[in-house]
Image (cartoon, rainbow, N blue to C red):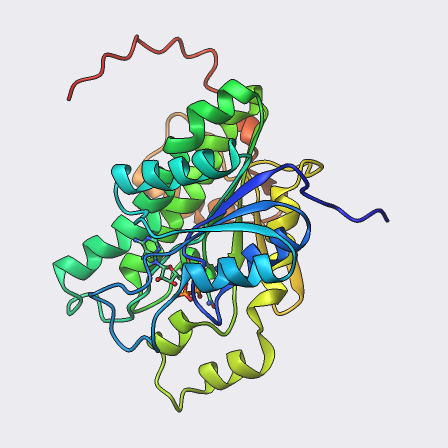
Length: 310
Ligand SMILES: NC(=O)c1ccc[n+]([C@@H]2O[C@H](COP(=O)([O-])OP(=O)(O)OC[C@H]3O[C@@H](n4cnc5c(N)ncnc54)[C@H](O)[C@@H]3O)[C@@H](O)[C@H]2O)c1
């Protein structure tokens, strides 16, 4: 098969300055396949705990350039509209266009729900979810105008529910829903939006788990972050047929993750007792159907005109 390349395309990868990290691996692969890469990372989150050293967007950009690629570092935060706009401006000022946005920046703090601070809950939402929203919104009108765009969001298997990670899980679930909504909206404009659920031995994992954690040892031995990058790059490629999908890509396994609806029952005149009596039918997975993007077609809704208020 002919090599899938990104010559002439410009890709932004947020949160890509760590080593080891998923974002770095994605950025290196895209750069090696010809993309102009904006390597974004704030470097050191002043509120992060247990992180080994600093992330360096400049070091990763330099790695790409040393390998013959084109890259520039960006140090702005994804967690505000102003930061997101500055990241996009760096891409436009340097390379003149943006074709690909990989929303990868994230934080994770494991803690029981009754113990995690209000501030840390908010930070999960601000970086993991709002970061993807602000960066996507900052490129959206540009991608619409050029009739082309690829956005790859980073979710996590935690979106299906992990104990002691309520805020992280909520943010990642939000990222999945954002992916679906933008895929539905971007389709007519040539914008494809997908999500990847990655995994790998990274600074985030090192900072989250105790040094003697078996999961940390497993991750270090088996899950180099580079193994998540081909799926990200494929979803970012012009030839990618998919939109609105979530692809799990960890340790060499690549799978589709989707939501299904059971057949259930339909009975207008139903009561609480009907549900109790027919609960097995509600739960039965026989004949369940995947919830597709067409289920979210809102084109016939005739929305009222939007009036912006500051
Ligand atoms: N490592 C895993 O097993 C795993 C599993 C599932 C999902 N993920 C997700 O993959 C993504 C990458 O994580 P990683 O494991 O490589 O961790 P990482 O900590 O190495 O990478 C995340 C990077 O984001 C940067 N960052 C944090 N706040 C930022 C901000 N406001 N603006 C810009 N950059 C910011 C950090 O400095 C860090 O370098 C994250 O979204 C994470 O939630 C990781």
